[in-house]
Length: 207
Image (cartoon, rainbow, N blue to C red; front, side, top):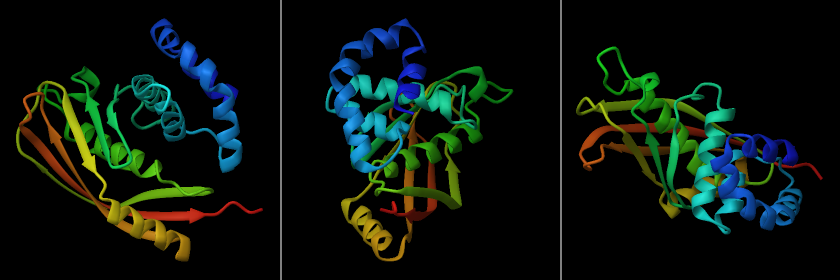
């Protein structure tokens, strides 16, 4: 699986290959051992987290490509990761035809999809070892203006919320949490706000 992911990412173009060649060579053995120690297969979030220590820019580029490859619903949207840490994520929705309405404004569905992807991505950075599932059980949205250029979806994850959820997963293997995401244009004007109710389920690795 590791080699398959590396092959997919390296085949996505000369630019990505040039950006990642040196970093991947350096991180290759560490990537393999860390994944084996954690008992998980390589995922988009794992790839970003492991590459981030080598090069944050390369990590974001790799993760952005991976989102466009392996997410069936959002494939082709061109979602880009511009910021990713343990407590924050920023995802860019590009102004492309696929993401627009017939009046050339950002589609509400594109904004909603990006918000869900961003929330799941941030939470996946803290996934416990084993099978970790995230489900959206409720969504509320408010749209303030029509947008014909790029949008930026942002979310912050408070440490207290993260620790409460992880503790509940350890004790009960299930947990719930709310997430608030805000969407801005390139001039930092508010475009939309979304609130998600998330349900988490964790199945630990046996043995």
